Length: 271
Length: 336
Figure 1 (cartoon, rainbow over the protein chains, first blue to last red):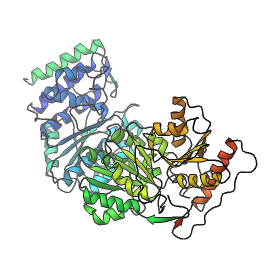
Figure 2: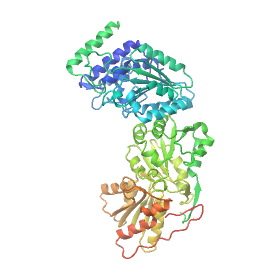
Figure 3: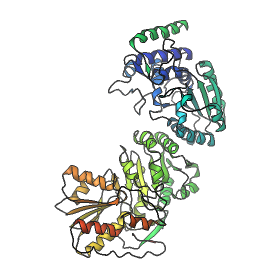
Figure 4: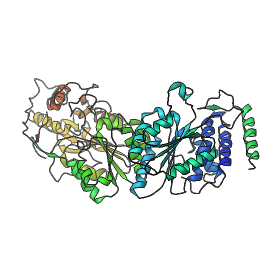
């Protein structure tokens, strides 16, 4: 969990998350870059909203952990040395989140488990009379796991209103687009039917994500889910249209282009 | 130790958990839609605010329990052993065992103690839990140990799986018996055979030792309430060829991966060259029954099966001794 709040403008933080993720993936030439590109705005919004030492951050899909690592590094919560070890032999900063992963309160490479952990945190906070929020990153592919729906039922039944899910609907899983493998739609209506406060929004509109987190905080009685419509290529036009969103290739020829593109966007932002 | 037929008790676990909860505000109780069956209706009645219905959703229940443990609570999670282990195995591995959290998983109705068919029989739960790093695996033998197991496991630093008989629980040990998690204890001393038993098989092992003793075969019976971490020193002391000619294990579980495997691994790694026989389910599911005693007999878990195993392994001539089955009246328990 963060020890201090984000001080960067969330738009700038989202760009810096992409830039850092690209730089960490570049040495290997491939990695979990698509997840960082699709979730950058959600991560930036969470790190802006989470109260240090009070609220919790769950990154359910361990493959997304580069995003929280990058945000923490930008905010001075994680040392440059630690980030530099990302995905290296012997490093605690593993490419798929593990128990040794810093920054977040829970992550797991076996998908679909994070929401249950979030419920445990929310119950523990309720037992102790705390109003702490639990920010939970979940991916759309994880909705194929039954455990997510077990957890969704439980959260609504117990009115865990301090719980908010940021559902990264990037339509990407290992075998291809999620909607070519399983029909998840209508996603928001499913969560609504389960008793959640559900909103459908452009996940790359960081103001919209921040506002939705604010609205979720005001919810009483219901947990909230933000269905964030995103792309695993967002912010990197240099990636080919058919780039693998789960395990993105970033050959040397693309590294320089990606660096140029992202630093250009940062300059345009006046950062 | 008492003689069969043994008196029985109802809900020794449920009462012990309530006693613990009175002393420990950090104890939580989770139930997977088997509240009365796992004796925690008693907890729910007294500590409703610390009782959580997980519903029929074991994967979610294990994940929540892990996070509650991260927050400083000691969750006791209850369901049948088969549902507590097979269904949420990946959740236990990732959300409980790998982070080494103090979740206590209480699995009732071990092995073929239920005629509910393979779907309800926890016949590989010990093997599954034993394969997980950090996990302690406990299979207690009677009501005296069951009463003590709650306090014994509450402060174990990592996760614990406890396997408990459901319903009428026999009282085998005297009331001064002390359950130790670090010790396999010799409850009967003998010179020819070392017979290791866990859980429900202790009563049958004691009966087998008695029957064989009457025919001149001296059997020591070692109660093994903790299968992991196994008391390897105790096993080797009892199983050494200088002390016995034969080692036998008896478990209400598959012979693959449970007590028999644990003892075999210990002997093999120590170079103990003593013959070994494993009594248990012989790599099979157990079908077709009105009652548990039928299954114990049919699948080779009876007192007679232990006697026959030892008799033939020792090369004794003639028919093995008959096993007098102590008739159990209402509220009494006698092994098959």
